[in-house]
Image (cartoon, rainbow, N blue to C red; front, side, top):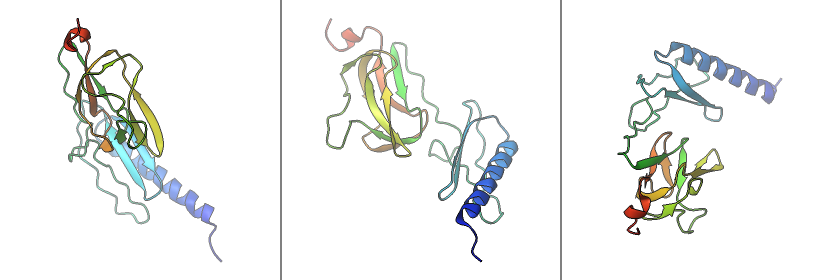
Length: 176
C-alpha cells in the first residue's frame, strides 16, 4: 500500500517546523528573522544587528537538512553592516533578500541614474523575491549620488542599493 503524498508532505513540514524551533532555541543570540522554505528545504537565519553568531551545521538526523545560510554572503551569519552615510546623505537599502532590478523590465531604462533628482516615494528599483516584484521606493527626496547594485544582481537584506544627497540637493546637482 502506497503512502498518501499529503501525509508525507505534512510529516516533512512537521519535521521542518520542529527543526526550526530547535534551531531557534539553540542559537546563542536573539534572532531578527527565520525564513523557512520547504522545496529543497532551507532555513535562513538573520541575527539582530549587534549580534554575530556562527552558522549552524545541519543536524545528523535523516530526512531533512536544516541549514543556516549566510545573510551577507561573506561567510558571516550576521546581517551586512551598511556604512553610515555622511551628514546630508541617505542610503536606500534592500528590505529583503532577492534580485535587484534597475528598470521595470528587461531592456527598459533604469528607474534612476546618478545625478537624477528624485522625490520621496519615487520607485528607484525592484527587488524580486520568491517570484514577487517588490518596488523599492526612496523614503526621502534627494539627488542620486551613487548606485551600489547592478541590474539583476543578487542582494541581501540591508544591502545598500542607492545613495542620495539629501541636504541642498539642488546645489549638488549644479542648479541653484
